[in-house]
Image: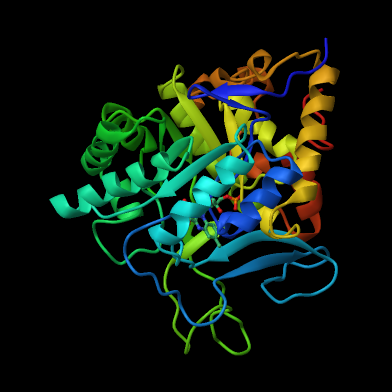
Length: 388
Ligand SMILES: Cc1cc2nc3c(=O)[nH]c(=O)nc-3n(C[C@H](O)[C@H](O)[C@H](O)COP(=O)(O)O)c2cc1C
């Protein structure tokens, strides 16, 4: 049977489970329509708010690169490097709700069967702010948005009642989700921040408030590196920097760990996975942990702004993996590895005879000359049991 790429997620039918995440690739109607033409199953708009937005002077995003033959890490563009991560301190859309409203309608008229998710954000410190969430939700759904994604996770907000500052407070999350749920006629997704101790608590707050799905992760709070010669941060304005967000390959394992916690705690709920996806093998991690859709930002930004080659690779990669494994739809493999993440004490130990523990036996005290051999032995690359 031919591989079926279409999925149903929070009651919505997607041609494929790959979405462009809320970010520069989705900041305009022109980009979003190009993204649908390129084959993305869904698009989440750049976050729309009601407050005036003024971004910092200078670049809002840069990319940290690793060198193949040295340990040098830098944002400097140079040949022969591999992408390590993106770093950004971009705020939400600097276009108004009035700018977005007719565009949402136009996009949906042109692409009625594609899924358009409106990302929205307001504050939570007053009744008026909570009403802003409802204003945004109603305006976007009235124009045809198929779902709403609540941005509870932007890492660079000074306001204590906005962005990831809401996302760190399970009660506020619950209140915001409930306020939106009261007026929503479309599914509500809550996008959480990874920068909390136990993301299960925040997810529980969102579900209690009526959220239909959790999106995770937004970027990880972080700083750009300091140039060892100039002593300036590699991104700064007048020498100053503030906390921004890390995305791209570096966060794939970090975001997976968050997702594993979420899908284990709520095996019957819907999750959209984000973080470090550039090809199907990356996306597969999230599907095997239980996600029903995934989203992409950094990789798309680096591929003609909306990721035409990325989506082509994701679709082809999914099709060929499904044929290879004999899967006919995502439901055949969704969650297959969710329960393989266990507490450390449940991981098998060698029996007493085979165990040669202690720092010395592990090789951590070895001389420099032996370091490579020790590293190989520690990873099992060349190790033969000593007692054999
Ligand atoms: C420049 C930039 C701007 C972003 N703006 C938003 C935003 O407005 N709303 C939002 O929910 N997430 C925003 N994000 C976060 C992304 O949607 C995504 O969660 C994050 O980049 C991780 O995915 P990635 O590893 O594929 O980049 C932004 C990310 C970047 C790099």
